[in-house]
Image (tube, rainbow, N blue to C red; front, side, top):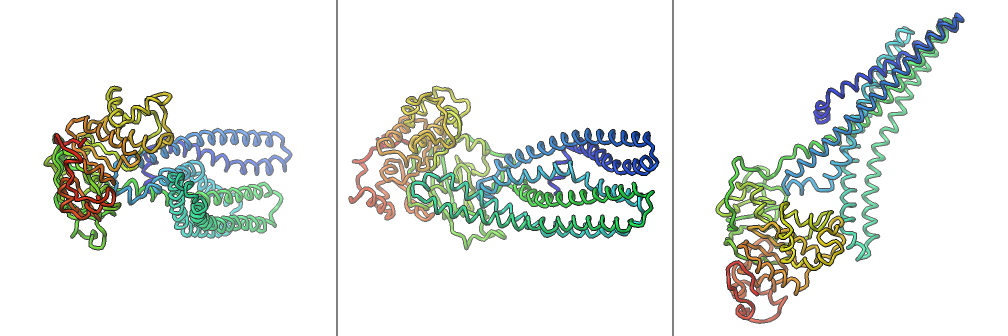
Length: 599
């Protein structure tokens, strides 16, 4: 709730103004029964037309004033609630951008989406309810009780009993409802996660004709969400009628106690019944608003968790800004997924966790092209993710040009590094706009050159609008190979000092892959290239090869050196190419210059 109050304070002026109009509206509602009693007791019983007209006009004026106040209150309430919703979404989105990949992995993308959408809506509705109902309900309830006691003082014990029972029921509703509504949001997280997974892999689902299986999975999580919602709504279904029953029982008692009243008290009796009806309405509003408050409190706690999430990676107070040339060195680097800290620190024991990387010691010279190969899950992607500091090493240190990567200015570091991930990720927009993600100020000539190097120029130019062709979300209107080539071109536009190619040619045929690698070789520029690939025919053409298995370095050297000394590399070679003694460097390639691929 502190989070909600913090955002309300930012708009305290408008909030108080809305509250003022709300108070005036509530007072107008309270005056109506009083004037009605005057019409009955002073006008009708005395047959005084002038008093009937006078009090009737007063009621009309009060009603018009109340309506005008309600319009202004609604206007300000909507404005503040929508503005706070916008600010919450903006702050969540901004904070998520500052978080490291470790934080994102822990929070989970589907849960973040739920928090930035559904949870914010819950808070918005509560704030809107505060300004429209929550303040009005207590004013109406207290005012109606006071006026009942003024009209018929004998009703004091009845009113006290009604309010005590109603208060107990409302508190019970909150106590039981809070954990249930919190569970609803968690179940919604899972539902969003399953939906997101299905939509992102719908082609695979259809290809394997697995719609029924996915449907069963969705049905299961949907049923869990429905059950959680039902459990929460049952709380309201039990307590709300009990509260209404309590107040209605009070109205019956009031009428029964007033049965012996004289006719002169008929107007007051009518007013008291009206005020009891207002008490019923106010208590119902309070109960409903508190139900919304319970959901909003659960949602605000989830939002607060994201806003207060501290990045797992600490930014240096005085970041270094070296001239990055591409020299990479790792010293005793180990890494464990899941947020574990360094061994020996309290609460961060890694002894029971499987290391994705174990004691890596390696050095890469500027301008070298390093091939990285290994079985699936061997740690290749984790290895290259440590270089642009997408993750921090759990143990050991990563050095770039003599500087610890954790001490280098992050913006400078990632500007000098370009990454082409395993899965080609494109954005909605034109091809030109996607390419300029690599460099916003890139000239058209640079875009054309990068596209040509990545062997993407031909299919781009054949498109109806060329570089202005619109791409669907994720590049759905392109083939897998086309998306990979565009992703590579986007990286090349940056003209990086370190280029990481994480199995980004897997969707290309052998000839196209050969053309792409030849284009990279001819491009020059002295970039350090880390080429992750499953194809030994690709990595064997590089300056040196890093062979990994299960997080360990099995071998690091030239193709010939690994064929002579690394059994893992030999097994990969024989499984993909076939027999031979591996002494074939002269037959396959000749490295004529540092940092180039063999032609």
